[in-house]
Amino acid sequence: MSDTPERFLRLNAVLERTGLSRSTLYRRMQRGSFPKNIQISTRCAAWRESAIIDWQRNPMFYEADGS
Image 1 (tube, helix red, strand yellow):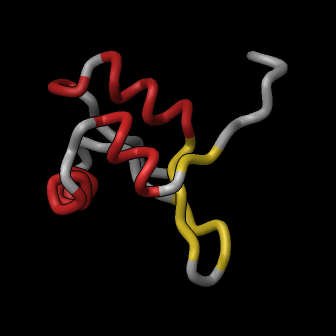
Image 2 (image 1 turned 180 degrees about the horizontal axis):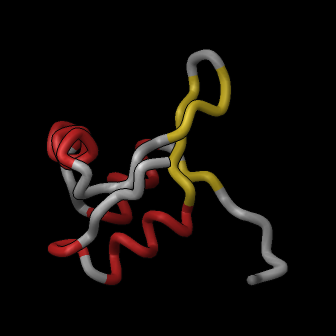
């Protein structure tokens, strides 16, 4: 395990890193082929940077875990 703390990425950063459109990203989340976002406050959601990196390693065969 790394000593680096987990970073959270907001939607625009995720879209920029992945090249996906917003609608494609949310559609893939529903299918389980993209990491799920997590609620970090009432009106704010983000993605774990480590999950985005995992997806980028093999986007065709990525399966989100149940958490």
